[in-house]
Every structure is written in C-alpha cells, then in structure tokens.
Image (cartoon, rainbow, N blue to C red; front, side, top):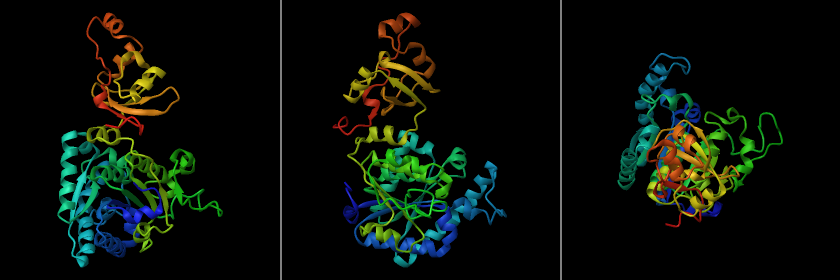
Length: 376
C-alpha cells in the first residue's frame, strides 16, 4: 500500500485521468507529452490505464458548433462525432512509442449491472495483459445523466477499482489542492499530503474554482479510491513532466494517502464502490454494532428511512452519529421499510398480515466501511 511519496515509485498498476480542458488547451502536444510519460512508466514495469475526457469538445467542430451545447441530443451527437477523433489523437500519440491503445466506453449502468461490470473488468484485464494502453471514457453518446451532471473523476476512481490499481492520478489545471482560491487569495498554498479527506472537504467549496470536474468531485474520487486502499494524486497536467515527477516521488500535486482497505472482496467491492445508493437507513446503536460485526440488518434496527428505493436497490446504512458505516442491497422498498421500521419480525408480520423481508439487508449483500469488519 502507498504510505507516502517514496512508495509511489514502487506502484505497479496505475490509472491516470485527464480532462477536456487540458486536452483542448494543449492539443496534440498534450497528448504527445502524456503518451511519452506513459511509455516511461510502462518501461519501468507499470501497467497504465487512461481515463480520458474530450469527446464532446472534439466533436463540436464537425457538428458545426462554436461552443458546448446544452441540449441533450446535441451533446450526445457531439460525443458521437468526437469519440473517433479522441481515440485517433491517442493512437497517434502512442505510435512513436510502439504502443497500441484500446478504447473502452462505459456508462454507470454498465457498472451497476454485475455481469456487465465483470465483463468490463475482464476486457480491461485482457487489454493490459496484451500490453495495450486502455483509454476509457463515458459513453456520452447514449448516456444522459452522465452528460448533465457527471464528470470523469468518479469514473476514474471506479476504473481504478476495476483494474485493482495502486495509484489514481487526476490531472488538472492547478498545482493540487489549495488552501484557498489562488485567484482570490494570494497566500493560498498547495497541500502536499492529505490523510483525512473530511478535514479538507470545506476547502473544496465552490467546485467551479478548480476546473471542469471541480475539486469537490476530485475529493469524492479520492474517497472512493481510498476505501480500497488506492492512493490518489491531484496534480497539474499541463506540466510536460508532471506524471513522471509524481512517480519519481517528487513533491508535486497533492497526495491523498489511503488508510487500510475498507472493502476487499469482489462482490463487496462492487456494492460498496460502484453501486450508487438510492436511499439511507438510519440505524439504532445496536443495529450499527451488529452490522459492523458482520451480521445482517433486521427491520427492528431501523430508526429512519430516507430516499425512494425499491427492493434490490443499494442503500447506505448510517450509524446514530451520522457516519455511513456500510452499503447494502435492501430487500424491501422505502415505503415498506418506513411502515415497518423498528418492529420485530412477528410484529411486522402481524401488521401487514403477510411475511416480511427478514433480514432486511443480508450480511452477504453488505459492504462495510470499516477496516476491521472486512477481514474475510
């Protein structure tokens, strides 16, 4: 596990993410610099996967658009027009280094489905085993919510999980995470290392200050990656040697040092990292302790219900102090849980006159966010 800067040079499997703004501003020279540094990492024995934005930006010209549109249909069309251009840029950049690339287009729906999730993981593993450099992007030509609200920071964290990466690097247009907005605060300084994301989260307020995805989204990505013991680095991407400097252990960017992996098993990783919670269940103290002790959740332990979910959806389980301690697949809809919360099985069955789902969340369908609880 990465415990500090010195460990970065020993990374074996890394995911790098670059946004549209950097690629659009830097053009072919940016692609070339990133490919050159990737080739250097590969020569050192690392496997490298890229998560690359840029399809919509590159599709504006062939669509005859002067600026990014707002209509979903035009955004999807621009993505379709730009995907070919994007992968062509990457192919041209890697050609001088004798490396091929393989494009992988994903939506969140692909990763929420267990079978498709495993297919994506196998495809990426096969590309890496063959010596290719995977280039992953959201399939914006068919996805709507990803275009409206998404960014590739979270996708990069999910890809890091898929490939079992040691390190995730998010390239941006600033030096790293700052103590303030450099445009407004001349005394703002870069944070070299972060070990407690919650302590610095207030600094990410005003996501627009830090580029397309925003610093808040990058913190979310670091949090997702950290649950699996994956280190995250946020660094300036328009520096021609930024990636090489990161893995040389130089003090560039901001390193988010992860704690022990919280979610370890394959299916539990999928539930805890990839699935988006559709609601929240507030637990009493006894139920929270039971969940962290690898036991199932019963209706009797639920105090409050938040969200609109159906049976089979993922929900977050929240301790009395507000901490999210687990994520699991709930076996009843929100309206049912709200009506029966706090009741023992016999009481719940008497109330509805029929069998009720017990356990409400089975222990095999729970990803617990505690290093001690996932010792399996």
